Amino acid sequence: MSPYSSVQLVLLAAIWGSSFMFMKIAALPLGPAFLIEFRVLLAAVLLSGFALYFQHRLPLIQHWQYFTIIGLFNTALPFMLFAYAAQTISAATLSILNSTAPIWAALITRFYFRQRLSTKINIGLLLGLFGVIILAGGDAFALGTTAIPALIAGAAAALCYAIASHYTKTGPKLSAFHNAHGNMWAASLLVLPMLWLMPMREPATETVIWSVIFLGIVCTGFAYLLYFKLVESIGASGALSVTFLIPLFGILWGYLFLGEAITLSTITGAGLVIIGTVLVTGFSLKR
Image (cartoon, rainbow, N blue to C red; front, side):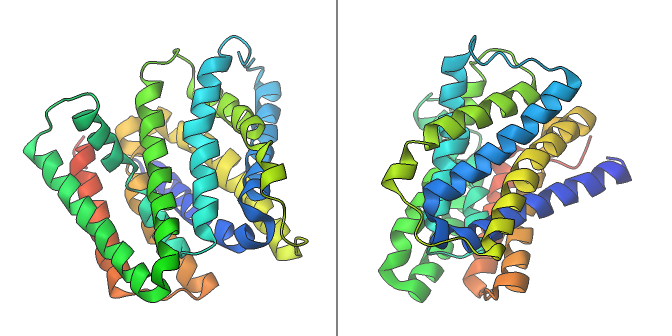
């Protein structure tokens, strides 16, 4: 990996790690529905601008069913679940739960597709599971029973990502940009009806407004473009290593800007989840 690609990878992890901090800031005043609708709509508009500039026509009507399913499981539902969880648990915990997506994908492979897994992957699954248990135990001890629904929501969000990753393997062969672009427009339509069920709680402050803008434009629209550029330059497996870095930045930003404590359960849980994810994905620094 070149130094330039390494810098891009760390930048992407820092951006995606910050998304949980911004959700934490905006989730309570805006509510999950308004927060996520603003987020995906801003990203969709940004990607549409790039599509017009580079003349990338989006086959939205032709593949509407595919985009609807991807928009639901890859964006609308997990984003809503994380926004709901952000009202209770820390940004650090959210970022760690987010990184369990490959572990959920392996579990789907084992129990839904009934494929045998290697010993290495099984060890990774156990370590990841122990990491989540330690993390959940620490949050439950600090927050009480109110943390349980939020932890379940965060884990379910990661499960949604795993479902989406399996579904894309059977979908139409579209470019990564088209996948992201159609995904965002579909998600914005899917979240729209939820605005009437989950109204905004209070007027947005300047801090909340800027958090939403950064979340939609930088953490979603720009981050997707950066990720796809990394896939092209270092390959999908290399770009996947961003998964292991996101919790580190999620914990760091939560500590620096939200005053979140870095507890022993946070460090231990994050370490086990990251190691488990490395084993499950088979990631290696060797090229």
